[in-house]
Image (cartoon, helix red, strand yellow):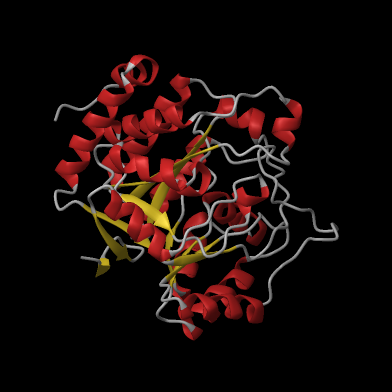
Length: 349
């Protein structure tokens, strides 16, 4: 299939017929995943702290150190969460927090080492690029050293959080203290070169233009051409409840389901080198999450035993393993549980 240009992607976002986009994205998905298997992972988000100095305007989760409800989880509290995950057959923790102003590399080494030693069967998928960047700064070491030291302790892969929209004009409005686009890309490049795989993400629906979205797609595709290190792309819409950004722009239009499916389909077509596209049922709800399987998604993401960040901003959907299986079967596909590396662990007939 001929590669989409940025101009073609922009035209599809602006003018493409939604049903035709679904047909094209489904055809591309079938080329990449001809066995009609749709996967999901049984995992748990663990937010080890909500203390953060970055103050992103779109976030309702963060607290400052002196706030009454600020916390840093103890290792014992984290162990209890992992024990409950193991009870339901979980295999992965998505591990991230706020960007704590005082925690240095030794604390993170102790944490990752503790989990990896206590629970060697659990994959640690953790720490966004901005966390890694700040750990390096506060510890006075390089990003490479942070990654090398955490990998040595048991870190398996890193999530794509913190990408939002990879446009500095947008980031300067919604998260002015955050690392810029080039730094986000470079941290993932450095991780990939150390054989630490990652995911790519996008949060849309704030102040970005269609052109910014296409530029975001292109930065992901370009790095993937270089490194091949992204396992999946995950996209979700801005959740505005309790956020400073919505307070500043109260008439901001909430993205529609149509918009979500349109962008998802174009992402599947443009990101021809990223093997997996994940449906964001957590923000869209289970039925649009299911519909996404007709618009290029081949993965339903996580059963989401625990989620604190987008739920703080108003997304309150949850789903059990059995419901995931039902939704996948309902569209004529084969459900399967996967691990972090997208290897099939259990297939449901």
